[in-house]
Image (cartoon, rainbow over all chains, first blue to last red; front, side):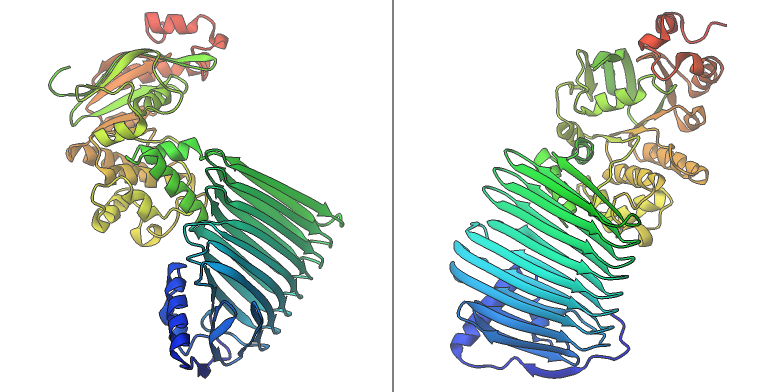
Length: 332
Length: 263
């Protein structure tokens, strides 16, 4: 990210505390790596980061213009992340959430305040590698200020058992000329039960792009509820959903886009691949309250495209290998 | 099957919903040759390609397909590919999220970057630009077509069935495609090249003419080109896209039994 106001290391609070802390820190870093994260980044002073295990804030690192205040709660953490107006953050802020134990509850309450004209990216990894009876609840508030840009990418790793419920809820506000991109990905390990709620209000000239990717198997349940309200003139919104389900897994995608102002443009794009006895459903809702707004949707649900499948098989792949490549490509 | 025969189709018939698309195809492709299969649109060329590859819905109701002496009529697409038979589709599939480099490497026994880059260069695409792109709709039809040909070349099959390798490709690149086809043969890859453009037969060693779901003649490329341009093309409008369909009336019977045209 380019920098008009270069962000410098403000402080590093990767403070060593006690052996128990060190063990937990190493365990969560190992799990973080399984989720696709790079542990070394969390030790890099130039990169703002926070590491949260259960209800413990294990480490926080700050850079200039980025403030992270984290308060430990009974079952989780309340984190306030503020990016000062005009700050261009050079490296994505790295967030690590997770729990190493097999059971428990983690509640993360987060507030993102992105100041006017700021530009920042977030890379969040949520890792629950041993989940057998775990619940992860997230309640996020996002405010993208005028002309600000926030890119948020969240990747999950849940281990092989599927004994987990993930319930993220987000309420976002994008101010005039603001830009919000949010990507949620759960394609490694079992999903368990996933229920995403995302509502966003977009004002004049604002842009929002929501991308959701999930791969369900066995008895996994995936439910996505997204509502994009394009309230300002020229506001634009896109929801892009890519889900694959197999075995007895289910997927239900409910997306709503509202064109409430002149020149508002919204589009919902959903592709779901179904294998075995899995069931997929997509319910797009289009609401237009201004005759100069335009909202469209497209959905494709079905088995793997036979031409794609046969093309890969004609290169010598067997059917399962070919399906896997197609699904991984779709979700990649 | 003769010693140098790689592929032999014996009286192959294929029924599709509403039409019999192959009507007793007999065809032989020899080791190391480029064999051009000429025919008008709708003559059954693509149906033959899909039948050879074992695509879903193209199982012969009669006849058999021999590949290197082995009856592959009942084999799956994968099994045929593993024997060394592959197909470059007329309209290549799109793959969201699959990088070009990975796509080319899929069919290679030992994926080597040098060979992947060489395959792209052979179809006049810059590896620097294309290796990291994905095989999706952001690529033009012509780009996907060339990448499909590059993937087949990189795979180094024993027999490459190329369904209209020149279609959708800009004129300047057709020469590169023809050179690649010749190069494939020089490197030991037999090629069955399907086309309705007789100019493409220039690179072939042998040519066959297809009409109404059957191969009606085989001979030298020059002879087949002459026959095609002088006797088939003028009848294109008359035959339409489905010469065996009901709309063609008795034309099909005449074409097959008497040859194409009636000078």
